[in-house]
Amino acid sequence: QVQLVESGGGLVQAGGSLRLSCAASGRTISTYTMAWFRQAPGKEREFVGAINWSGGSTDYADSLKGRFTISRDNAKNTVYLQMNSLKPEDTAVYYCAVRFGGGVGVRLRNEYKYWGQGTQVTVSS
Image 1 (cartoon, rainbow, N blue to C red):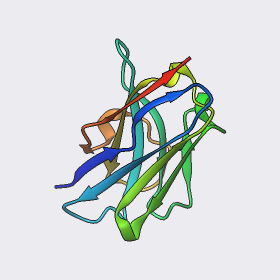
Image 2: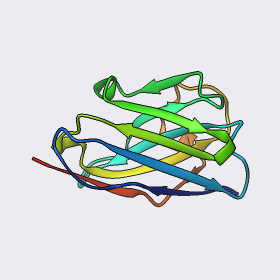
Image 3: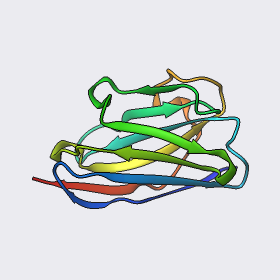
Image 4: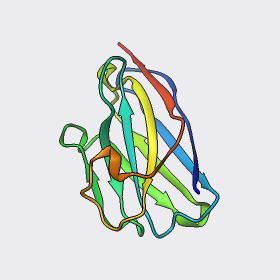
């Protein structure tokens, strides 16, 4: 069992930045792939990006490349999502998730076993 708790969300103006954190407990996530998803009101939950166990490989949704960066600190059992140049369309609840398989490139929600409760990000225009 893995418990994930996201934090760092909030209200920010367009063009601003936020860094989200996802703290894991229950077991170490140091050997697992971690991902971020987001869900805007009335829309499906969508893939944001993923990072492999070492942090050496990442994968991002094409529309977010260059603005969002995922990193991890295995010593702290924590994954981060740095979001820059935020736009109103980035408004969503952001979730982190863990996948017990290795590598990145897996973007399907049902491939991820444990999820956090999410943190709200609101970008005002």
